[in-house]
Length: 240
Ligand SMILES: [Zn+2]
Image (cartoon, rainbow, N blue to C red):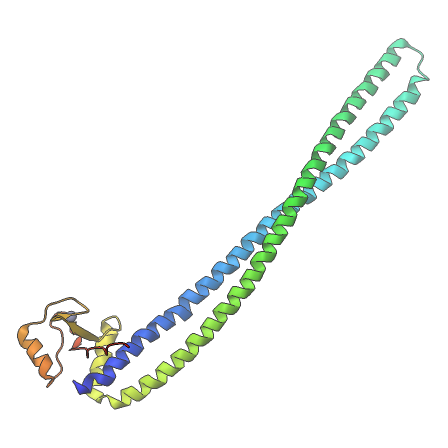
C-alpha cells in the first residue's frame, strides 16, 4: 500500500531513535561510570598501600627513639655500677641492664622486620602507582572514545529527525495521527510486517479474509490481536 510507505520508514526511524536515545541516556553514561569506578578502586588501593607504608615508617621512627632512650638508660646504669657499694644494689642494677638489653634486642628485631616489610610495601606501592597510571590512561582513552561515539550518535539522530519530519509531511494527517496513537500506547511500535500470514509483532495468524484485503491494499488493516497496522513487506532486493 503506497500510502503506508512513509510510515514504514518513520517506524524504522523511530525504532532507531529509541535505540540511540537508550545509548545516549543510559549505555554511554553507564560505561563512563564503570571506567571511573575502576579508576577510583585503583586509587583506593594505592592509598591503602601508601597509608600502610607511612604507618610502618612512623612505627620505625618511634622504635628508633625508644632504642635511643634504652641506650641512655644502659649507659647511665653502667656508670652507676661503678658507684654502688652493696652487692645487692650491684646485682639489681646488673639485672636491670640485662633487661634493658633484652628489650633493645627485641626492638632491633622489630626494626629489622619493619625494614623488610617496607621494602615489600615499596614494591607494592610502585605496582599500585603503575596500575593507577595504566587505568588513568585507559580511562582517558575510553572517555575520548565514548565522547566520540556520543557525537556520532547525536548527528545521526539529527539526520533521522530531519528525515522523519519530511516523511511526516508526506503522510496523510489522519494516518499519521493513527500511527502516533498506536505507537504511544503500544511500546512505540505501530506497524507490523506480515510474514507467512502472521503478524510479526504479536505472532497472531491473520484471518485469510483480512490477508486478502491486505494484499488488495484498499484500506488500512490492523491486527485483530495487537491493533497494529499491518503491511506486507516488499521483497528485499537480492544482494550482489
Ligand atoms: Zn499483532
